[in-house]
Amino acid sequence: MQVRRLGTGDFDLAFHAIRTLKMLRPRSAFDDEPLRKFLSRPENILIVAAQEGVPIGFLLAYLLDRIDRNQRMVCLYEVGVSEPCRRQGIGRAMIETLKTICRQENAMKTWVITNRSNLAAFRLYESTGATANASGDEVTFVYVPEN
Image (cartoon, rainbow, N blue to C red; front, side, top):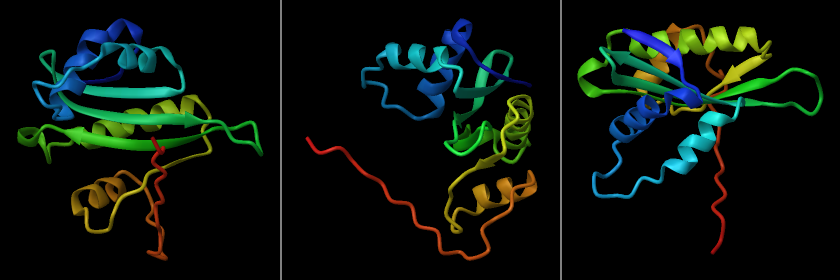
């Protein structure tokens, strides 16, 4: 298994990973321009796990500048592993790759939001060294642009 951060030269693998692992509808149009733009920006992180060139996992994260210090933090946005490959250490390997990137970037912290009811995610994050907020009172607000 190969796990690595993808860049602009990895468009085909990135396209295949997102197309298959994010479960996009086969008939839906997939405009490749947003993916090319995503890969071209150094603050965007796409890590893909592949076996014999076939993507079996992906991780999306974002490097975020802070207003109060010259140090970034990282938002771990999404981790996905193909169903037959789950519980084989693929998510862990991708998070370890992200942690290496964070050290290289001198990021002050990485954070991720999940639900306590998402036991698989909860266990993955704990097993890779993350600490859950002990209060259990986290709320995520989402703003959707009005048409």
